[in-house]
Image 1: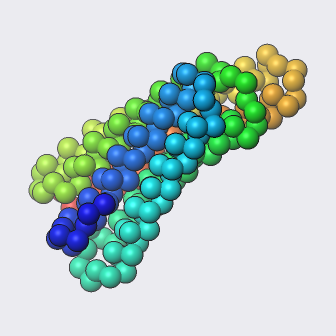
Image 2: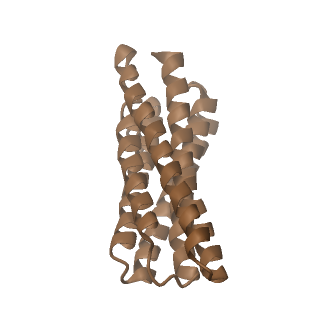
Image 3: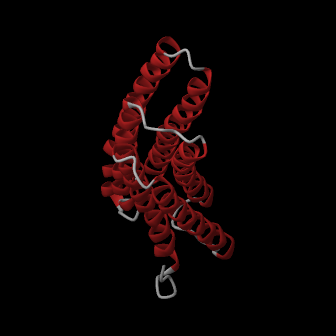
Length: 209
């Protein structure tokens, strides 16, 4: 991340966009893991590396907030958005790591469907956060993306509900149930945190548009 020559105001937008782009990359990696469940340790490690990249971006944002007197948006909003973006990546990484640590033999169809929803969340977040540096009325272009993220979260909830129903109704294997209960929880959490980020973005637009 080459930030030395960026104006202070642009550094925040750059780092937030880097965080959102990283979510999209991590989500794509998760979807690949689910759809092609091979070389699992290596794929999980790739996700972990991207999660650490995201942590560094958030760390730089927090450092910049402490060093900058005047920020382009309310500093509380910048910090909160950064945290919510980080939460999305953390949930994705936990889902992938848990599959490895629990020695899951193969993903379920519900997990595959959830990974596709999460990838779409990442794509929309990348677009929405990329619009933060817009001025005036163009900032309102974020709002349709926030609405879409809310819809994706609802879709994720519906998939998770079906997944949990099938888990408890179709299996008598207690260990299998416990494993997938945790994994589904992390996958749902990723979409929940994406919606949280959307809510922060919406609040920013309402303040500044």
